[in-house]
Structure formats: C-alpha cells, structure tokens
Image 1 (tube, rainbow, N blue to C red):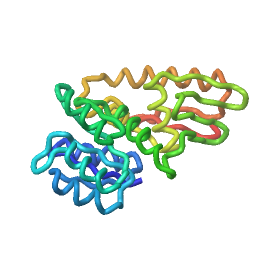
Image 2: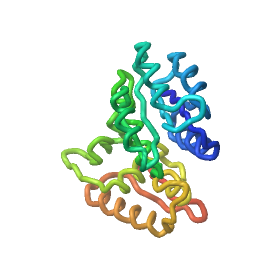
Image 3: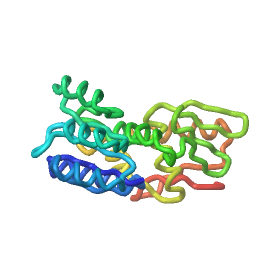
Length: 224
C-alpha cells in the first residue's frame, strides 16, 4: 500500500512518514497543496492523508480538484480541532474521514486502514499466527472454537507482536507507535497490557508465549 502525506509542518511530516513505513506502508511526503495535487494526480497512491491548512492550496481545494477530475483515491484529512467548517466542507468534497490533531499513532493507523478498505486490495482484517486469529475489525482473538475480546490497547500491542513474531519489541517502540510520540505514558502501562494478554492467551490454551527479553523488550514466541 502506498500513501501520499501532505503536511506543511516538516517535523510532523517526518513523524507521519516514519509511522507509516514502520507499519509496512510505502509513503511519500509533500509540504504544500500544489505538490499534493501534482503527486495525487499520478494515480500511484492507494490513499491520501491531507492536512487542511497548507500553503499554495489547502487540502479541501486539492481534493475538490481531484474529485472534479474523477480521481477517487480515498482521502483522510488532518485538521485542527477548531476547523469545524473545513471538516464539513472536506467531507462534502469527497473525503472519506478526518482526524483532529493531536492524535495517537494507533488512531491514525486505524483510520488509514478503514480508509483503505474502500479499495479492492485493502489490508486484510484477519491476522493469523499459527492457529491464533486476530480480527482487526472487532478486536477479538480466536483459537479453535474460543473467542476472546481485547481492549483497544491490548489489540494494538498484540497486533504489533503478531506482525513481528519472535522479534523483540522495546517498550519505547510500543509507546511511540500506540500512544504517540508526544505521550507521557509510563513504561509500566505497557507491562500491564502485556500481563493482561498473557492471561487471556493462557486461559484459551494458545501455544504462544510472550517472553521478556532482558534489556531488549518483549517477543511473541511461536510453539513455546
């Protein structure tokens, strides 16, 4: 999946590109509406993430021009909380969704996944590791005939580990990707969610184990 990100705050743009690339997306970034329009017209993108307020041309104007030319690439707007009128205008112009700043990494990724489901080749809703199935839409895990619901953060922690089995993930990586790069969340919060996941997996008899790797982080071991 290839995403175009248009954001005039260079620091935020770099962060958004890093988040997307760390979660298996290809991403290109531009800092103004004029470039956003030119790049988006290429037809090479599966989705667009557009800041509303940009120099040259704002995000709403960009999307209106794209839609007028029958370019239907799904689009997500990034907006300030005060830009209510612009949000409505953007949705009327053909946006699929909007996300108000500041936002968490997990919500950004969830909204992008939802946006991409409008395409034929969207990211699968079901993530499988061995006989364990994680439903990315309902936030439930299934093993045999058993199904167990997860909290939002439990789901995000387990999703990261299932996408990277046997690979240690640091608490800092969990926090940055799930709670966001400006969060004040303490590392103990990660431990709590890991502990809850361990209990749920053990109760279901899932043959996977979340191991603590000293001075590194946590890894999901297959066939442990």
